[in-house]
Length: 278
Image 1 (cartoon, helix red, strand yellow):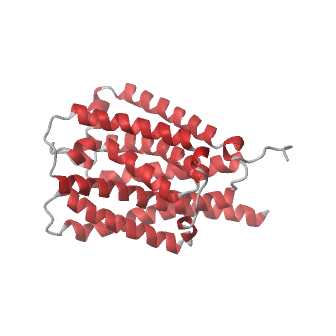
Image 2: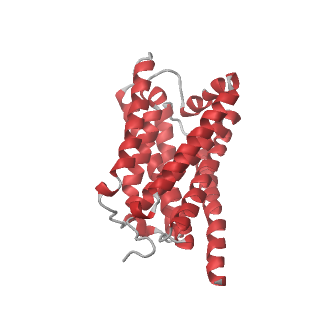
Image 3: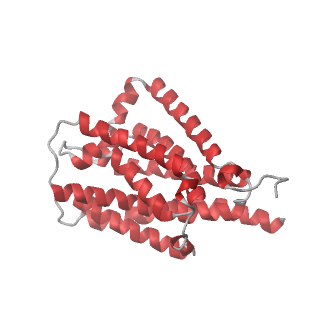
């Protein structure tokens, strides 16, 4: 019993430590890259993100979680509903970006650089947060009970949200970073539940990357003078105008995402027999 408690405590300490280590290494790696003579914003972001993928892989090796690369996953029919919902929502975000933006398109090489960059964000973040952190939590709290899965997913997802506060150091408005952190926590819960359902880090990286890409149409596809940081910070104008409404909306969204996460983690969805079943 004592060893079991120690294992849980270790996982609870390991999770934020791994996330902070990832953030710290990324911030340090960015310093020399920003000094390189790269004029294009997205070419520079691509160089940074390739470095982030290397860092994520090194953390995976250090944590001895390379087994995630060998996971074959479960059949798509066991988790197609949440994937379809996420992709439909992403498609609506992308359509809105294309319809509402009047600026000219960026040159094709820059658009391709944007696409590759954002897809690599999905790779690096999924390897660290689902592959390393969630697996460590799941091993400690158990994957055979709904309680264990809920603790693992909500802990890992909340940490995923909190690390987005470090975007303040990249020039994002503090209030916007706080709202982004709340939204990221909710998505972290949902992605954590999806990973435990599908057990395929490659699928998770693709879904995560496509979701982010659909939200960055304005800054990635159009030459509107936007960056990722300014796109996130632009939310602060709305927030300052009607902060109460924004906070209520975010709270409602978090409740909905929490409910969806719990539904995805129920025993029947995970194909785990309940007590009394053979």
